[in-house]
Length: 309
Image (cartoon, rainbow, N blue to C red; front, side):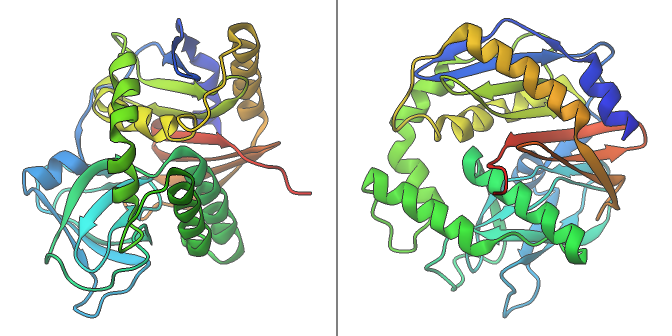
């Protein structure tokens, strides 16, 4: 799709920052957009949006979203919601118009609970860790291609969380991802303090010692800055167990290669659940998704994934 190719071609890579096996390469572009929407976290905190179960009985892969604000609200792929019958994550990025109500696709990140803790969900200010998000991106793209749904491979997400808990010896009565993050928070806090957003930065490529993990980009630097802390923690979760020293020259080459491969990736367009279009990217070892509103790429995320076969 032209808007995505134009964006990728225009990106400028800044000086990377490093900490404990994680490398963050800032991304910039000329003429970034001004932020003219609220993010889900701030809309929920200010009670300008509400998220509930779709009914009293609930339905695991869906939630009800209401935008009660005079602005649009951006729900970002992977963001966690706490409460109601069980904690969930948002499956795709969605831009919801002022005053609109939507049923949104979600995945469960608390396998062992199905009972009310609250009527409404609260913002966790946390995102699914990057390796699991990559698999989710790939499975949802396949789901959209095969039948038009936006459902993830729920069993795979539960398995990824369980494996991470086992590796970290984390006990959780409900197998909640929130308990995993809380157990690792002292380590993640070190990463959070090590990386800073640069003036005008609207995105980043995240890499471990030798390879790219993924890319995140927003149309507005302000939106990226507000999401940066939880993004760093999401990617740090994939390196904190066994950090590999960063080979700076090799990783820089990989970042360039990753952007080139994104340019070659095939794209498929679908009508978005809210405003704009939902664009999926698939290339050699790449799975990605973008929310595009007109010629504006509101949010783009892409990840390294294992190639079939």
